[in-house]
Length: 416
Ligand SMILES: [Zn+2]
Ligand SMILES: [Zn+2]
Image 1 (tube, rainbow, N blue to C red):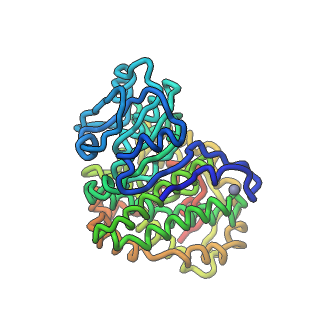
Image 2 (cartoon, helix red, strand yellow):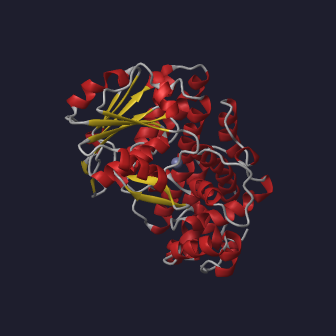
Image 3 (cartoon, rainbow, N blue to C red):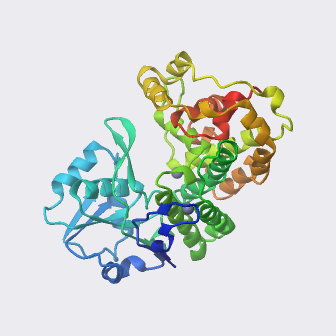
């Protein structure tokens, strides 16, 4: 399958001019071995540097792209941070014109950041269907200990070899499926905010995302049997999600309460005990399950009016107490211009039946949990390193990590 990403470029019926920098994604068995053909077909020529992790170098044995320079990063303790990027930037030969990232999300973030720093071209060769960030225009970095998204470049083309992706460790694919399941609540949050506040929503981007989600969910069972078409569908959904974010110019279509849940755990607030790290998609998947449970509970209320209260800003002491001094300061700054401030109790009550309608179309948390569990995926708080009894606390603080309107943020005005 080839996605011609340029088809999504240009003026849209929503009135915006959507800009996509990725030209195409090739999702086929064996396509990494034919990369030369695709590079020349899309006019990506020059001196190449292929960047691998140790694992991805081994996993692609026999189909390594021809490159003038090869850099292999040690997998142990590898993070997209100031250390790994400095290593690559100092090793990168002066006349390299194209970086080929062959590997995981981390290798991609390092490569896209370095390509941006050097002002050179970037090609993505994912070796696992583990996240939707392959087509991202920003790099998710840990910069001197802080999680940050830094300016980077989107890949010009994506070469997703299903022969390689299908042989990646199962938990990577299942993590990718968690990142896809996340779109249930991410899309619901976007739609609900659009209904309640009139926030911009592009129907085309919305339906691209919805279609990608349904395609992947419809194929999940095939992952168990190792069917090529199932791996293709999951990879397709993850790539489309990245392209939808490019069209939008931010992560709105792909990230809502469930991602805020995941980010809260990743940030490591002082008051939250996290026993062990989990993968991004695992946390997003589990976040989806708990967000769905909470949304179903809220939407079961027919008349919300008696429970509504006026907006009030975040409590500085409460935030500082939970997140700690440094993180608390950053959270309060993020919420300085709180998107909830413009919402009135009437906005919520007048639109409550439409909000309930959006939630009614969502699956139950238990349905998503059983789909993930059937694949051996993580589906409980304990399985991602946090205590079940901390879930209400995580959900309570989650909306404050990003200033984005979600139903969970609106819950600050709903006393239930
Ligand atoms: Zn549009
Ligand atoms: Zn994600």
